[in-house]
Amino acid sequence: MALVRGSVVSMVSDFFAEIGATAPIVLGPFGGLSSVALTAAVTDAGGLGSYGLYGYDAARIRTTVDELRAATSGPFALNIWLPTGDEVAPSDVDVDAAARALGTFFDEAGVDRPGTPERFLPSVDEQIEAVWEASPAVLSVVFGVPSGELLSAAHARGIRVVGTATTVAEAAALDAAGVDAIVATGMEAGGHRVSFLAAPEDSLVGLFALLPQVVDAVRVPVIAAGGIADRRGVAAAFALGASGVQVGSAFLRTRESAAPLSHRAALAAASDTTTVLTRAMSGRLARGIPNRAVRKIEAADAIAPFPAQNWLTGVFRRAAGEKDITGLLSLWGGQAAGLSRFESAAEVFAELTAGVPR
Figure 1 (cartoon, one colour):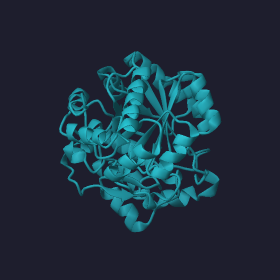
Figure 2 (spheres, rainbow, N blue to C red):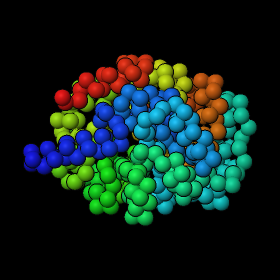
Figure 3 (cartoon, helix red, strand yellow):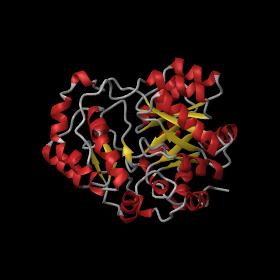
Figure 4 (cartoon, helix red, strand yellow):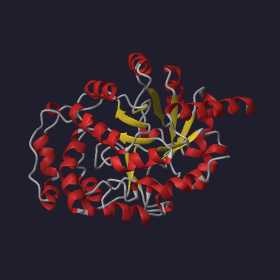
């Protein structure tokens, strides 16, 4: 077993070296909260900066990539959500009724109640075509297994593909498909639970249990995510067989992130029991810090299916973010958010790399 794990470590060293990274530190791809400044800061420090493309159409992807190229000459990852098949279209939902159920939040944020849109999200095909045009070092995916066609197209362009697993079975499926690396994300992680083989409520495995079992089950490098915020978490992840770590909350509270000041303050003040799992803001299960909007939506059971709920709450959340109205934000964060002590990406990166085995 030691020889097998040694070969995996060698593989991951090659993986990061091949994409041009000098440290096995990956920035979590924040859907809706990614920033060019933070992505570039992590990349320039020697890691792999990531940018979440949730909700971005092709034009916005092109603009964002242009900004990333202007901000850094190093490698970065672009992240997309694969369709799971349960997404609703505007014609499937009474959008007006769902908006009325959330009406007070629109009023408080100072925005009009939205009407029915033509679509909730751009198609994944549109996004992928823009990703091919952008040609990032890495394409990372969540909520599923990339098709053989997607993997072949990525590899033909020299793009590495990283999948994301919440269980050993999901990791095995990704490995069998031919991804280049797998993020094993424990239930401690902030943001959406990206399970795809079973309900997320039935896929809540902690990182310490998940990581070594995934390492033993797959042939490709494994990147640990969930509950890692300092050098101790990094060292523990490597001891359990990880070849790299992906970190979200610790970077999210830095000044380079797109999180409003009150969100960053909430992360700094969080304890181990602060966060909850909720569908209130998006219609899909996600971990964050509960606030007034989450509590009221849950109490009223005013939760439309995904992505309708995410689109509706996004209208008032965007306005609330501009005005920093804490009670109306999606305060995504993980169980180790309280360990996030630094306010600059450079400080976070230095702390994390101190835990990488030498």
